[in-house]
Every structure is written in structure tokens, then in C-alpha cells.
Image (cartoon, rainbow, N blue to C red; front, side, top):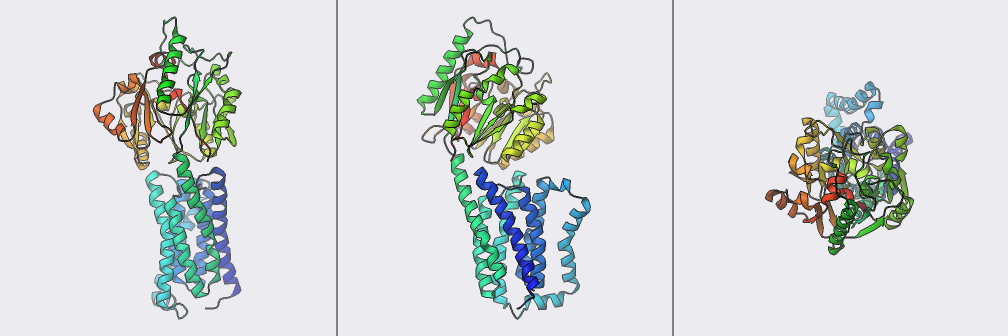
Length: 510
């Protein structure tokens, strides 16, 4: 069927909008080395759907109308999840939601004419029409899959299955367009290139997630009780030991030996003289590395810990990680706002979720800054001890393994927040292991799952904490990782942190 030139131009405009959304999404994904789901992608998807809806109507092509109908409200759902509707006047959102309804009303008002024109189209035989609908169905089912996948995780995500379905559907649509001599449809499927590239990025990202991290550990030559952190870290205890530093050094060296005996990569550095920081043994509080080549530096609550961001150690971390980008959040210290890395946050790197409990060391503003720059979604909650004091770090009440999560539920004071946390953990494929308050006080959650060079998993945990685990807890952990207890009683008691705090993961860039 011949149509006016402007109709084809309208169709090309719709395809161009779809192409632009993929170009932006592809660029951001290449930049982060992770398949991104930016808000602009869904906004342009929604606009493109309206334009192509009109094009399909003008071309009297039911397969196009059907295809656009499938994804329309899914685009709206993703826009809503990303919070973008907060910036849009209410009436525009209502108009957007009513657009397909208006088209449906027009169809129902004159259903016989619609059926005759669209389904009994002399230019589109029924057999060809069904083939076109099949192609659009496969292509648009990618949106349904994306919705189900994202809904379970309460976040907008573009998973690999979405792109596999997109490639399959594109091939069918190209064949349909060639048979129909609809070059708009054929040209519009140039997006298959981006879909294939997103599959490649997904595969690469999954491999990066499984890469073996090197554990940076800082030898505590100036270890002691930190007066500046004691007011809010209620795990710290004063010690009368005269040889406290020697005890700490012995425990540190013993832990390093235990790790290296299992062929777990460990990088040991010395804390620089003149730090004035007795907590340098806990390097995971001031930096984090990411498999896209990013190094993040964080604002520290205690002023005597800020010099732990030693340039020499940073250079060594950058060398091992292959760092290509630094995100420096330390400027927030000037505003009295803090976020102490993987102490304040427990990161689900695969699901891109940052769990964080509010405390003087965990500012919502800095957390939002981190999530925006690193592509994470935050779950923020309140957690207090039995005296009503805020838990100073999230990593003493939550630890994530590959297939499990250790969680002390009793300290989370809001039932809805606890429900959200558990739902997110389950959606991320974690089996929740409930830890008692007494176990938490013994640092049962302050542990870290690591891999050795052969890919074998270990859960590094203090022997104090390991002794509190029940048989049932050990069984669940054992299905994923081998327990690896380390002897660090003086570091735990005086420093107020345990095994997890002593290990900062240095992920290699892919």
C-alpha cells in the first residue's frame, strides 16, 4: 500500500527516536562497562511509541499497533520506578496514560470497519499479517520479560534476556518488512546492532562480577583505641594491655597467613608514619573499587582517619585494579556529611543495590550522590541497638554472599523497611540467614565471602563470630562457601570492627 511521503517521514521519525534512545543507552553502557537503564531511554521509548502508534494506524498495519501496545505501559512503569514523573505536571501523565485508551475507544466504536481495514487488508495477506504479529510479539515480549525481571527487584533493569528477545524479534521484523516492502520497518531494525552489543556487555559484566578480587590489608603499626570513633561505635572497648599493638600485629599477620595459605590474593601495605590514626587496619572505610575501573574515595567521620587516604596506597590500588576513573566524594567532609564506603553500605554489585542504615557516619545526601554516579539503587533504613543507639555501620548487621545473606533483623526498627530489605535480598537470589542480636554483637555479620585463584569461595569470619553460628546456619553457608575463621580478638574488641572491615576488595578492571 502506497502512503504519502509525510507518513513515511513520521515512521522514520519514530524509528529515529527509538534509535536515539538505544544510542544513548549504548554509550552509557560502554562507559560504565555495565548494561545501564537510564531514564532518558524510557522517556524516548514512550515518545517513540506514540509516534509509531500513529504510523501503524496511518499505514493500516495491525502488527505495528499491536507491537506498540504491548510496551506502552511498561515504558510508563519504568519511568515511574525511576522517579521521573515527580518532575512532570500531573495532567501530562494522565494524557499519556489515556492515549492508548483513546485509540481503543475509536476501534470499539467502529469495530467492523477496523476489522475489515486492518485484519482483511488486501495489501497484507492474513498469513503475512500473522507472521508480522509473531515478529512484533517476540520483539515486544522482551518488554514483558524486562518488567517481570525488574518488578521482582523493584528497580529498572535491562537484563540479558531482554536483548536476546530483541535480536530474535528484530530478525523476524526485518523479514516481514522486506516482504511488505516497508523500508521504514527494515531500517528501523538497525537497533539490532545495539542489542547484540548489549548482550556482549552483559556477558562481559557477568565475567567481571566473577573475577577474583585482591584483598588490600593495612598492617596496623599504630593500632589503638580511637577516642574520636568511640562515641558512636558501641562495639569498641578500652584495653589495659600494655602490648596491644604487638597483639594486633600478630593477629593481623596470622590472618594474612590464613588467607594466603588458601591461595586468596592479598596485598599488604604499611600505614604511613604520622597518620595519627589507630584505625588504619580497617581500609574498607575510605575507598572502594569497581569492575568498570572506578575507584571511589569517601568522606570519613573521624578527622584522625582522613589521612588514611594515603596517596601511596591509592597509587598501589590503582595499579592493581587498572583504575581509569576516580570518583572523589571526600569533599562532603566540609559539609559535615559522611559515607564510610563498604562500612556504611553493603553493596549487591550484581543487582546494583546499596543497603545502608542511617547513622552519623552514613549521610543520605552522600549515599544519593554515590548511587547517582555509580548507577546503584539505595535501600536506606534505621537500625538501633538495645539501648536505642544507631548502629554505626551497616556491615555489622548485614553481609552478602553469592547465594546467601546474613541479617540481624531485630535491630531494624521499621517493619516496612525490614520487609523491603528482605524482599530485595530474595529478589537478588539470596537466601536470608537470620542472625540473633547476641550473634551480631559477636560480629557474626561482619564477614566477607571471597574467592581464591581457583574460584573456590570462602567466608572469612572471626573465630569469635564463627563459634556462635548454629548448625543450621553453617549448613546454609556451607552450600555456598567454606567457613574460614581468623583469630583477631584484640582488633575486634579495641577497634570495634572485625574481619570484613580489615579487607578492602580491589576488583580488576575488565
